[in-house]
Length: 566
Image 1: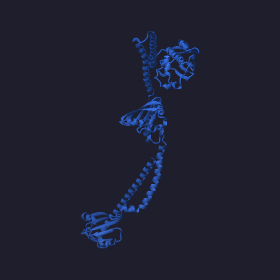
Image 2: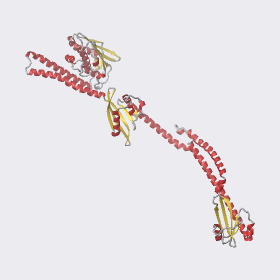
Image 3: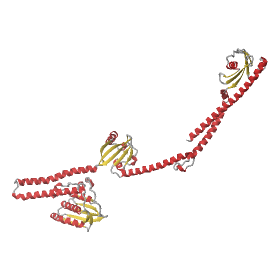
Image 4: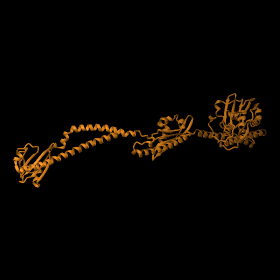
């Protein structure tokens, strides 16, 4: 701005100087030319009287004068000239002579071929019909300019220097208050009254921008708060596929951090499938793929965002589908296992019944076949009951909570199983004092009963089972330890799966359905507890259930977790 003001002031000063020179020279030239013409006219009148009286004698006495007198006859021939003695050409066609002959007076101006000299001619008609002409030579404006060029240049240089200094000082003085303006608080300035409307507008714009910034910050904070708590990965891409925003879930998925913002997404993720999905979204509006990372399965959806009819960016959403895939896999396995487990006792029952119906069984063997049918039917009923129970737990059906005294409940379950344990010489011990816990009594019975049943079933002859009740950190602990065969390390993460058996032949011999520990697991989850397993092959197993001791609302049923979740 300072340079512009300097240039404007300087150019104005030089323009004024040039205009002043032109005007002054024009005025002075016109003034002096007017004086010279008036003097020339007076001289012509005096000379006319002299010629009327003295003729050529009068003119010869004027030789050497700066003014030239020429006496011209009526036919245009030159009678006498004060500066040229030789014979001269006819002057009848000269403008001033012709005008004098016609009107009594004539005048004209002629320039030299170089335009540096200006000749003024006045002519007057005498009484005898001849014409007396007077002329004088003057320097033209061009000649004056050439003659004064050096002086003009010197004046112009001085004027330019002075104008430059004044322009610089003036520009600095004008811009100084502008540079000192406080634009953060426009209304506190009083530099120039002319700036008041501008400062008022700036103040209004500041308030508007501040309000917009606050709203933008609020929206950004809300967006960040929402996206940071999303389980799904979210990535926003610009027109050139640069990352505009990426939430923590997406950072974890693509193994990066916030520093990737502003970089091209394809430098972060080089998968050919991802590139194809992005290209498909650019061309068709959407794209998708399935991505496997760290044993997790993700569904990636890419959508194009449009603005004013043109593509403005992409939205990439990543959904963790592992639980759904595992649940679907578990459902398929459960269906297959149920079909198999139901089919086996039914085939046995049908086979035995067919033999009895066709009389192919000896009379003395009939009781044994009937007992076999009854045992398989009981196994089938037990299996169906367990399946129904698991379905109820899966659905999360609401059950009434009440105070339950765990020690009495544990002793009751132990008493029911003592006859079964006694057949193999196994002793059952219940340790710990009274332990009241809020919960569902039926679920506590199923937890204690299934854990004790498994501990007896997979114990050694003459072994022992110990159920211990305790309290730690505001939680009730129910632990069942046995001296049995233990669980191989490779199977320990899967024993809570439905129908999973470490030793299928031993399980079938023991009459189990393979759903006991799965029921325990779901019952514990329903009560808001957790379950842990410790087992050493050949030495025994201990399963500990941790339950909250404060009243709580019934939790929603959780989907079946993958095998390694417990």
